[in-house]
Length: 296
Image (cartoon, rainbow, N blue to C red; front, top):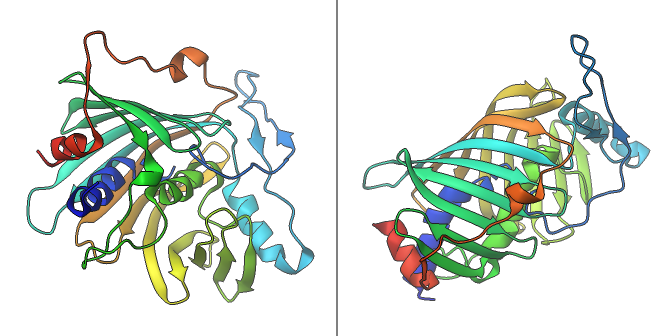
């Protein structure tokens, strides 16, 4: 893949995903902790809420982090609706609307519209393999998100492949923005951790009310790879999540604003919903051609 095409992947696919392809551990590539399930009953109907996982227990010296995890709560299976505004430094903004179905096994089912027109129908496997269809043109693309990298302003690869960022971002819908593993330091409104699956360093700044203000990922100490700024928290049943996220990639002047419109913890997602079959009569195109379509 050319540097130009791959660099745009950061812009176009981070935009489409920033959730995903943000927020949302749908595509998480780490094992889920073995957590107890709890369920509550809705007073009016007697219907059980979907199971929600209690946060993992951690050593006593990090009780504050445990309190933050308790506040945000976790869920093994979620569905989410997002709006992502991609604003290039020079050019018009583009609005993506995304619906996500994220079962516990790590797959992501995705439907996306661009400027209110059906755009992409896709399935991403836990290992990053994906198949997607450009709905209007009936063109199918296959590949792996490990092959798509973020480039700096000098055209050099920076950080891990896009799959790592997607896994971290999507993980937040299920677990929230507070690191739940690899915590190395906590206190004075800050939590630091090293993600065990990607090796990325994580630094989180916490507000006095236990909401998270900012999260930064580092390829190495002092070298920031992604910054997330959070605001407008909302309760989705037991899950406390920011509904607005500003994503910044160093070296990329494009602005990415993600809005979480709906988040639901559900018991399971049906096999029919997760099944993806390209349209009859569709044609296959390469990844570079797909990136060109995104630029059009």
